[in-house]
Length: 192
Image 1 (cartoon, one colour):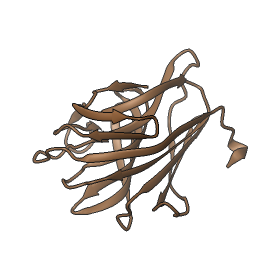
Image 2 (cartoon, helix red, strand yellow):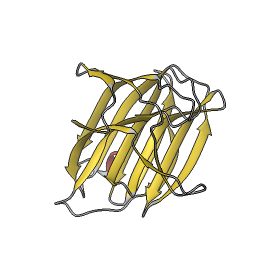
Image 3 (cartoon, helix red, strand yellow):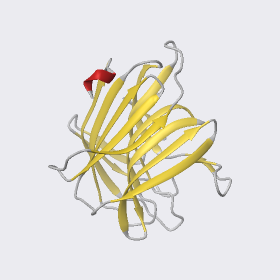
Image 4 (cartoon, one colour):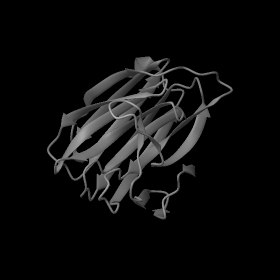
């Protein structure tokens, strides 16, 4: 795994990835305010661009500033990516998805009960990305979003991994942990 925008403070002991996010970091493109930010933290593996896969992770954070976020990311380049996970808005955790295609981001959130752990499961088959979340260690997965994501040539790389950021102007970063990060390649649609 390698970093895009490596944070100043982080560790990986093969079972838990710990990060303290740098301030004023984010992934966002244009929509609403014209902002283009591509300086969030992304720790990833590269897969063939046309690969079907299942990615999972458990996220636990000490969210304290508006828009503190952590979760999974799929990325072709700065204009085509998906991030999903926890986003902290107005003092509360939300399950969040941002889909960015052709340089434009959209954002959707689902209210959750601020669990200690949010489990994420992302399945990609062809152009479809199926995003699910579960609240708490024993929570059951619920569908959050089915999104279009471009299929690229098998010779190109699709980056898949964990992401986190602290966009808010007054943020000093926060501590977030990622456990049980896993990617199952050649995942087939009849398996879900």
